[in-house]
Length: 96
Image (cartoon, rainbow, N blue to C red; front, side, top):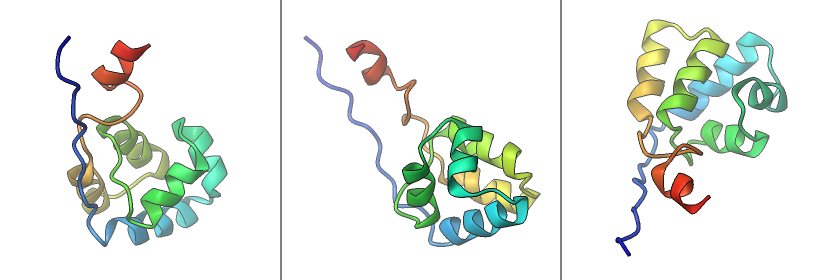
């Protein structure tokens, strides 16, 4: 049996959460509505807005598109993204 895959953990930039909160409000979404659009839970959106969680690359791209982020906001969000998170992570796929 191979060693388990260790998921990368990163500390999000402090500016990420407030930027997402403002962008969500500007787009007119509640946390629940945004979560439905992106395919995550409202709790996950809250963690992103409180800067306690980094999004996966896929979620970050979806958020950027759904929220209509500008260039600087998109760069901030995508630079905080981790490539090994989310439901498509190889460890989760192997466990299924």
